[in-house]
Amino acid sequence: MKKAYLTVVYVVLTIAAMVIASGAPLVFGGNGGGG
Amino acid sequence: MILMAALLLAMVAAWIRGGRLAALADVDLRWGWLALLGLALQLGVIYGPVPTTPDGQSAQALLLMGSYGLLCVFAALNRRSPGMPWLAAGMGLNLLVMAANGGFMPVTPEVLEAAGLGHLVSAPLEGTRVPMSKDIVLAKEATRLWWLGDLFVLRPPARTAFSPGDVALALGALIFFHQSMRPSPANERLMAAETEN
Image (cartoon, rainbow over all chains, first blue to last red; front, side, top):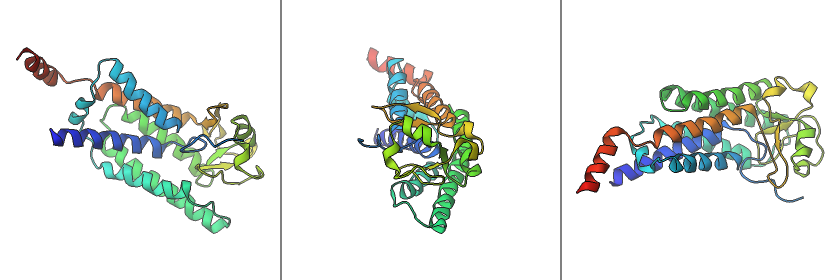
C-alpha cells in the first residue's frame, strides 16, 4: 500500500517536472506581479 | 504557473471522467530523476540573478540546453508512455526555437506589453533577458522561427504568454492523465470483488 502511494507520488512529480521543465511560458512560476 | 494550472486541470478532468489517482501506481516511468534533475537545473537559471555579462548569459543558455538534453533522454526512454509523443513534441518545439535564438525563448516587446508584463524589463531592448522566465526580448524580424516563440497572450489578470510547444505539452499532460488514471481491467475486477465482499 505504501509502495503504491510512493509510486503515485513519483509518477505525478516526474510528469510535472517533465511538463514544467519542457515548457517556456513567459514568467515561469507567477503572474508577474502587479503593475 | 500556466503549465501548473494545465497539469492540475488535466488531473481533475481525468478524475471527473472516472479516473483514479491510485491507477497511476501501475504506470512504469523509467529514470524519472532525469526530469527532476532537468527541472532543478532550470530553477537556478530562472530564479537566479539575470547575468549582466555576455559570458554569464552564455553559461545560463548552456545550462538550459543541457537540461533539455536530460529531458530528451527521459522522453526517449519512456516513449511508449501515454501522451509522451505530445510531451516530446512540445519539448522539441521549444528546444528548437530556443536553440535557434541563443538558448532562450524569444518574445517580442509587443507580446510583453500585451501580456501586461512590460514592467519586468526596464527597457525592452533587443537581447534583454526577462526575469523569472527563460525568455529573451527580440524583435519579430530578428527572431528565428518566431512562430514557435511565446506568441499566444493571456491578458491581465492572467498575465502570461506561451508558445505552440507549451500547447502541445498541455495536451500531452491531458492525454497522459486521462489514459493513466483509467483503472486497468484487472484493478476494476479487484475493486468489484472487494465491494462485493
